[in-house]
Image (tube, rainbow, N blue to C red; front, side, top):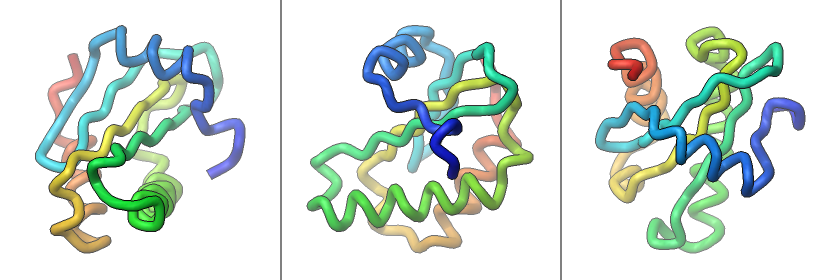
Amino acid sequence: MKKRDIVTKNQDFSKIIQNRKYIKNNLFIIYYMENNFPNARYGISVSKKIGNAVVRNKIKRQLKNIIDKNKNIFKKETDYIIIIRKGILDFDYHQIESSLIALLKNNNWR
């Protein structure tokens, strides 16, 4: 994932979440909002309740890899904040990938 594809500012996170457009399943809550950039941008949030730093960073690395492999599923000119839910520790990489892809393909975009 390139630096230009990452939502980094706290202000941007808040703005996207306050927009209140989201989709969710048992592993993820994805907030989204249109942007003025030619490509999609992503932010990933993993709560401290999920595990220690090693576990949280592993989950973020896996999710970044999944996003890079499946960029065509995401809408262009949109910001995404992906919030990881606690149950993710019970799933392996392939289950996480299929869950995210299914959520994005079979969603109710609000």
